[in-house]
Image (cartoon, rainbow, N blue to C red; front, top):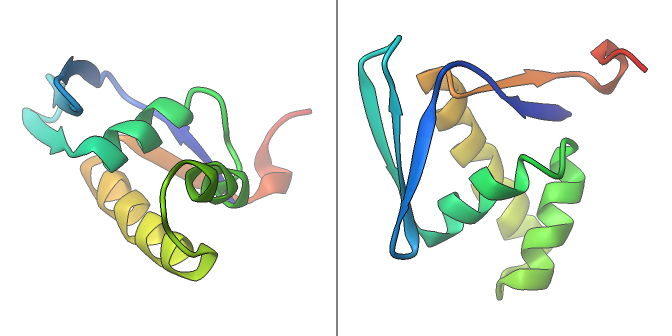
Length: 93
């Protein structure tokens, strides 16, 4: 699955965390250190599998737990309108 940021979200680091705001949605979101790292990695990595590989390299987490936790986190971001998810064939080449 491909994941990309979308919308007018502004993000600002605050210590190890990130605070995000969407003026369009009138929504504020706070991300912990791991969530902040995922948000940052979305600028470099589009494939969810590649995202999990990077996170497993950086954090003490098994691939299975990482995949489950990342899926839940991305679901929450999608519900807020902060990301879009697409199948790999949907992207222009």
